[in-house]
Amino acid sequence: MKAAYYQGNRTFTIASSAAVPPGPGEVRLDVAYCGVCGTDIHIYHGAMDKRVKIPQIIGHEASATVGEVGEGVTGFQPGDPVVVRPLDNRAETPADRGHSHICKGLKFIGIDSPGAYQNSWTVPAFTLHKAPAGLDLKLAALAEPLAVACHDVRLSGAKPGELAVVLGGGPIGLLVALVARNAGARVILSEVNEFRLDFARSLGLEAVHSGRNDLVKLCQDQSEGSGADIVFEVSGAKSAALGMTDLLAIRGRIVVVAIYPQPVEINLFHFFWKELQMRGARVYEPEDYEKALSLLASGCLPLEKMITKTVPLGNVQQAFEELDANPNAMKVLLDCRA
Image 1: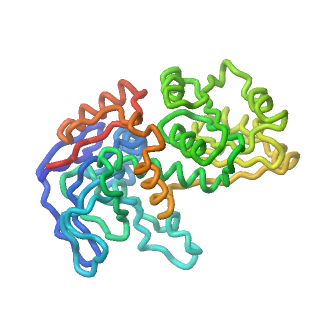
Image 2 (image 1 turned 180 degrees about the vertical axis):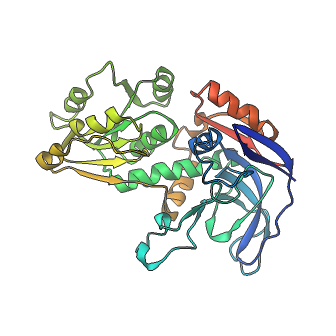
Image 3 (image 1 turned 30 degrees about the vertical axis):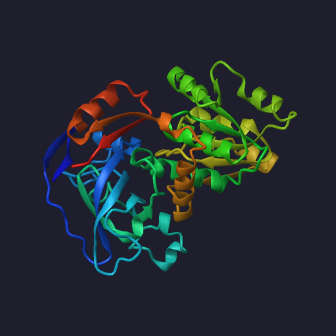
């Protein structure tokens, strides 16, 4: 067996690894594909060295087949195609009020514990979802980021005919836009990167350059003067946080998807004046994974276009170096099959 180990200092090494037999309540997986996530890039850049235990196997956007099942595991058998919801909530307490996906003691598998950049991966059985029969495992590897988008759109309460603005056209922003459109919303995606704008348009989305268009006027023109019903803030830009309230209609809703490590300025007057609502959206819940898998199986979204390329696990160092040199790639998959 082989695994890719993050060694710090923007370096991965490929080394032998032993398959870990599944214990009670665990399943050993034969990993098929794993997507490279923005979080993985942050790890590669050293931004999370205080959190990961170097040398560490990272990666969490995985599709796989079941290799072995441990004692007490039901509902899975060898050969089943699966995806992993990489949240370990076993430290949940009553103080978390049942919100296990964001409990205070949450451990993110692939960051806080070994991840999927390996041939064989042993995980708790409760993290698994069966992939629909016949679903290409390459597409199944998109389930994790797609579940993020499903969670965001579900929390927004998007209704058919509503106007939604997505600020930020990276992989998650594009997926949010596609899922919101699938929910019946009219979607405008705002971005400044020309590659991302062109890519969004190739997916059939209305995409505008925020520096060259009056986004407030565009929202008003498409809503009889009222403004957008929903804004998804996915960019993480200070200017977006400050300007997002300008776009909204009375009682409009904001869903903050981007991670802001430092406080930023927000126009609170608009919350008073227009009775706006804002909520955060973090990771996903089981129902979001099931929705994502349903969308993948249906073929109703052009998700195959999101996969920029697939590279062998052994080329992980080159893949990360190329992503640094060409950040316009949407989704790079590592082929982790033995």
